[in-house]
Length: 274
Image (tube, rainbow, N blue to C red; front, top):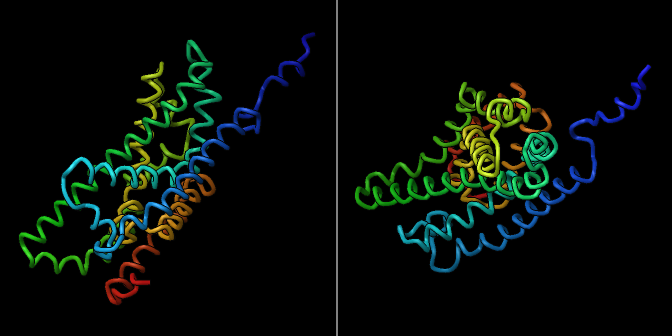
């Protein structure tokens, strides 16, 4: 009679804290920590003497490569700080399950993993370019048509209320389901090879953007990419993706919180000065 205990001992839970899982987790957390430190030192450059109070508006000064490049650097570092902790389950799944299906599992682990993460960051880099162009266009329009500058008074309130309403949308729910479930995501979007790793990372990033773009809009347009706002939203994202795993009740609490804050900002705009 075969020894079943020998077979069962080879069955290892997905997220058991082995050397690989610990290494991947530590690397992502270190990268996030370094990004938080870098963000802390980069933020003063966005509001240096001679610039306007809103640092984001201050650095969106032209369509030059240097202006866009600096914004992208600050933006991507901020995304690494905010999103890397929430990415740990997805990267662990890629390392421990997906790589075993590759022709060269070792290559997939050591080269495919950073390529997967690079594909993920590419989506947020693209979102950063779109955000930069949108801000630049808004500034240009308000300069050409000064009457539009009045809209800046109600913009923060509108953005907060809009972000709250988005929490109720079916698009948010669909994108979130792909962000929080490694099994579901890789079952639907599995690809082979190093280029496949990039495409999977890009696909995951696209779903993540679909899930979290409203948070990023609040951070950018309302919080001016300040460290406290970034930290608060990073906590919400991590809680949403890892702890409660997209629970409806949590999304509703966040939605109501954004709407209430948006109404308060509309009634008392000076709240943002704090």
